[in-house]
Image 1 (cartoon, rainbow, N blue to C red):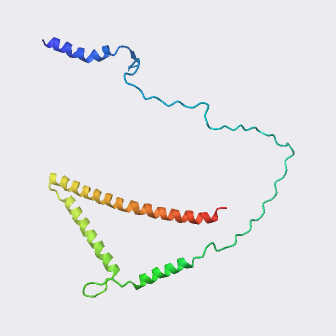
Image 2 (tube, rainbow, N blue to C red):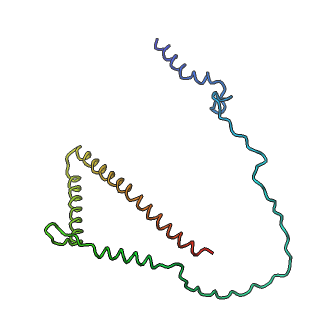
Image 3 (spheres, rainbow, N blue to C red):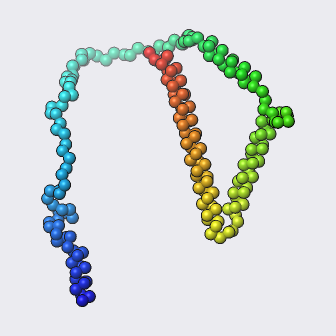
Length: 189
């Protein structure tokens, strides 16, 4: 009985080879059993006009010497546009910045920007100290879970920052490119 089962399984293995018929380099021969899409008919000759170019011989005179280069005159400065309105706008912006009051705490003492920076730097070093401490503690398999959670958190933060920073950078690049193209348009001949 086992012999017949083995012969049956071997027969099932080689049955597709027998059923497929001829083999053309391990590919089935003959038409494909599904319809193919029809290709559009190309117009011939092409509607694109062709231009015949013929070479016209030039006179075969003796070679002449080229003249020596001359100095190019120095460009003179000319005002392209009146920038007084831009200067007025910048003065207004500067006046608004100077008029902005310095940030103060609730009790009225002024906040020093350098002190704010030192506080945020201390806070960031504290956070990364905790991260290093957690990665150094041996808690068995929970260490891998904690490391995975930290890497996942860092990845999420990186993606969120990228989705915020990339559009800002793209906008700045577009503004700079537009300004450069605007100024280049004045110098085109």
